[in-house]
Length: 422
Ligand SMILES: Nc1nc2c(ncn2[C@@H]2O[C@H](COP(=O)(O)OP(=O)(O)OP(=O)(O)O)[C@@H](O)[C@H]2O)c(=O)[nH]1
Figure 1: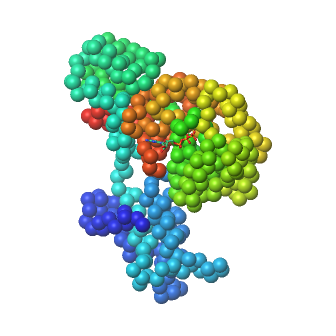
Figure 2: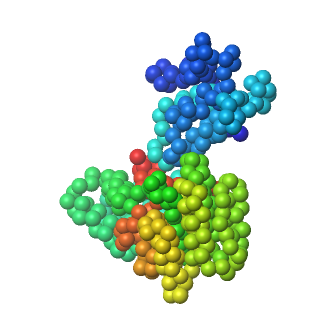
């Protein structure tokens, strides 16, 4: 189940010497066992561990190992309707997975120095995009500190879809600083460019926080056709499930039959209920039903899909307003998040898409997908500069774990040559 459990358990690691000592499975089990006088001869591990796992392993965050440890602890015991917990699998059975060992490994792993936040995998996924390629070429030529360098930077920014306004701002600021002799060489100027790119994105790198008091916290996803809405919902469903949120999905893309099937498949794979009606059903009715069901079940998060629509289709844009109003009849604060999914390969057209969707339904967060491969990527800067709407997630591939909480520094560094990155 969790290959990560099988890591080398040698205790004499540098971490152990530096005081971050790894606890052994026996030490953890002993620490959590009931006092000897009152203890049964072999206390059920589930009973002693469940609370400790809950206490020690955070439910939220990006750490997939946390979910795995919780799973191991949960599956290690069964609880009678009234009686105490007992071990689900006898300890002597070869199928027995020792949850104490799992927790020990988790405690050890969580004391290891953390990788820079969210960075792993970004460079591998984004390294091939136009932004990265343009800048890779520029930096490899060992440029001189002069006007030509500024021109080349401007061309690279425009080619990568950063947009005229944002590119002009960036290069204008670098030119001013160059004239004030702030840079000793081209490398110093490129470092300054990196810092300015990060500074442009930092104000919008605001993760989506699920308000636990809103039951359910309603996320309405919108966007044009084929940008990755349904796939993103599937990935979010997995993320929120792993984080321990109760979840429900509403199959509001009643236009494309495959979208309902796609969402149901994601729901089944992740053990999440999906509220759906037939094809061509009124999406506002689906959203209404789902919110009622989620409310009566006390579900923590409801994510509603909608059909893709062109921002120029006035009738369909009006339909989004209707979904919003219908949700508001059950909970005036719903939807709590209107998440617009934007395809990172769209280029500057993304700006007019966002403008129209924002006018129709008041977008509160963005997901920029398909930033991997050949995407230009630069549109993220243009979006940040023009709208300042939080970018919640970045899609850097098709696997569930490729939907990353947007991290300004990781994003910029993934697209600049490694020598420049922090
Ligand atoms: N490479 C890559 N592909 C992605 C990413 N996100 C989504 N996709 C792919 O984009 C395609 C379209 O995704 P869907 O989720 O069906 O798009 P949609 O917005 O729901 O489509 P409509 O319902 O037609 O509007 C699928 O093939 C996805 O696998 C990403 O971050 N990277």
